[in-house]
Length: 196
Image (cartoon, rainbow, N blue to C red; front, side, top):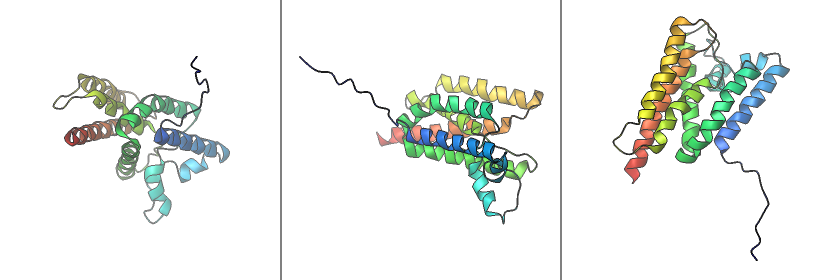
């Protein structure tokens, strides 16, 4: 009679996504403890002196900060649903590259063009992942219809919200994140196809 192994273990299945989530949670806890001072100091980007070394930390660190629990949950839920599938498909180093590229580009754009706006949160990264995800099952020489539909719905909604709804949501960051995700998805998919 064959004996089945019934032990169940936890698996750190998506190291980049799980580490990123834990870092965002740690930043949120630090913000609570310091009454928002760590968000201002490290985890948000805004116009500040280029002589201040923390300015450069904030160019990327802003994606770790979140204004409150709801902001954090909204971003992490989508990230934890989409991210592990993408990390499995493209590899941890590529997903880390997508996160860092999105953080740096959105941070620099906010710093240069919106000097009086404090930007924080992982929503640009989430939108990059959303627009990256349709490339997972693409055959060479095709454009996935799902990419077109996702782009129209998500990016279209952000353009509409940016033009007609006054809120504190950084719609441009969402759009930029989506564009980065789509571009990097196209490049990574093309590189993968060229290897075969």
